[in-house]
Image (cartoon, one colour):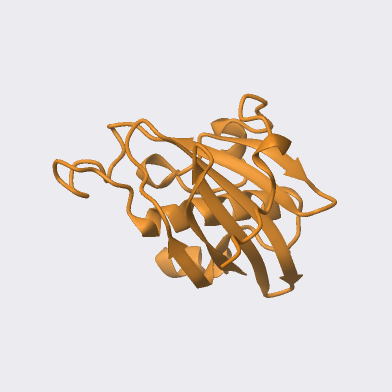
Amino acid sequence: MAKKPLILDHSEYDLSQIVADTEEIHRYNPQRYEMAQLTAICYEDLENGICVGYKDMSSDDFWVRGHMPGLPIMPGVIMCEAGAQVASYYALKHRLMDTKMIGYGGLEGVRFRGVVRPGDRFVIVVRLLKVRRLMLTCEFQCFVDEDLVCEGILKGIPLPVDELMAEQA
């Protein structure tokens, strides 16, 4: 069986060239503390709708102690969350949807193909497939070194922030 093509060849981005650091990412993404899953964005291509970010894993990440004790591996759901955060950053920065915040609308075809451990640099490559008023669809591939560890399709939907805040008050 032929390997699925890469969204972007590893040689086309440079992880040392920071486009957005954590502070800049926080201008667009609301996740903080344990749920902030990005260290930096290192590549943006508006013409092809591609964005690359990464998270430097450490032994202090919230999942390390309990998943799995003695053999810490990043949970798959957190891998998908990191993909969603790259997509959300890109969509909100470039105003692809008329919303303040994007949430999950669904995941499709997600496959976990390797493990991520403390000390790894987890690289996320996202490509925009479709933008509609009420849904953003992207494909994502995640890597450690150049090894594919996760891939799939994610869908983002606009969250009604003002309504949710009013309900909370």
